[in-house]
Image 1: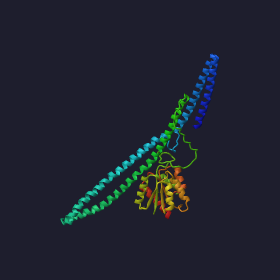
Image 2: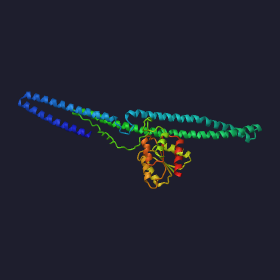
Image 3: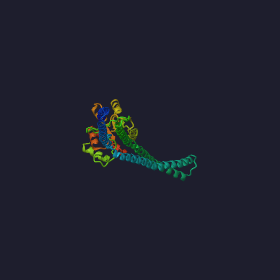
Image 4: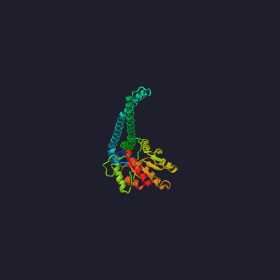
Length: 262
Length: 124
């Protein structure tokens, strides 16, 4: 784009020379008293202005077209065009929603187990104290030892369930990594688009440069598009699982690896 | 069994460490990308590497390649745990010499199965 700017500056300089020459000729004709020729030169001046304006508008139209095309160009990774940004954000929403619900479901399932262990332990503790104080009748003691036995069996089982629920809660936090990767990508895309928009604004501001007004917009160099080199780069989570290039599950991964002799 | 867990997201490192602990592996260390992991591997006596792919600095695939190029590390079992799910990526990891590949999100059972399989093969 810097080259285009230079071309345009050179054009403006040559137009300046042309205008000065015409104006000087016009003055000479006026001094000589040939007003007919002077008016004809004013017309020439108008034509120069019109031509410059058309040239510049043509140039701007082409550059604008390029910039709009570039806005669509994927510059932050294979699956990160603007079109798919909404999908990405929906993926984040879906993952966080799933994880929050999974965590709450597991907590809901675990709570009654913890409550049950707590209530029965408290009840048995009262009975146990009565036994230690020798307040229990023989049939009450038989019932207590049966309860204790049942409690020990149940609490071993319930605490095991609780442990696996807690472990699943930890696992449900994997969304942070997966959504984090997606958010990084969306942020990179937004930054890229921002750069291109600034460029567009700067270019639109060039209309003013024809009329002599200049703007100090920052120059943003668009990223060079890749030269088609085929490398296997990291892309982050795949949003579209129906894509044939993407494995849909761990089973697909295993099948693929076993086909490679794993 | 000394294990190095490499991932740029601390939550994922914690999840993997937690699952490894449940499987009886308590001696684990962490690194947040390949650049920090490589010197740790070279200077430590790690028996197993669990690594993510997409990380700043050095990716998991480059780390895997460096490990396979290193005479002292080339036989180290490596499990890749990653969100990268393209077929050509999995093939590339296999060609670079990965021992197992788990796609995120994963379950505790899948992680256990892959680790068991790797050690079956290493020991067998």
